[in-house]
Image 1: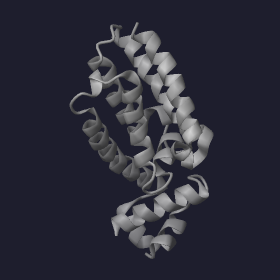
Image 2: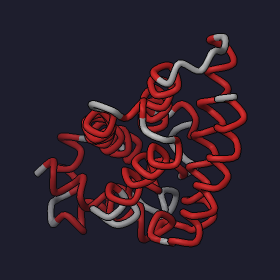
Image 3: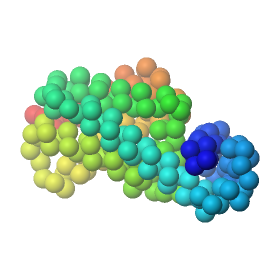
Length: 184
């Protein structure tokens, strides 16, 4: 039942937006009573937190798989392709949910959401692994910048952002230009 409720919440958040979705909408979509929903979730913010938690685990697993082996030694353009491919792949199932979790205003500050923090941590690991000399403070800012650049594919392209090949090409070009200045 929890999975059904979370699936319904995800669908409705994408269709209606977070602010316009209510617990009644979620219960109705999931085919359960509102009382049953409240047995598991006190409000829609709790459902968003549960979706974030599930996606944090998925992101960690996917990014860790992507980082295994030679990732830090890849040419910069190939590494960027791998990172962007994570977004393309994960934003497909369900379509647009990753973009929603990374960009929606609402229950959580976007920069401090568990999803954004997970991506930030994995990108910071890549910066460290590439041996780019910089202070911890600068590395933090650099990884925030990379995160903002990548999230632009969702802000500019909407929920289907990563599916837009032109937007992906431009995002890659911006990342390459920025990161090459750091590796000099």
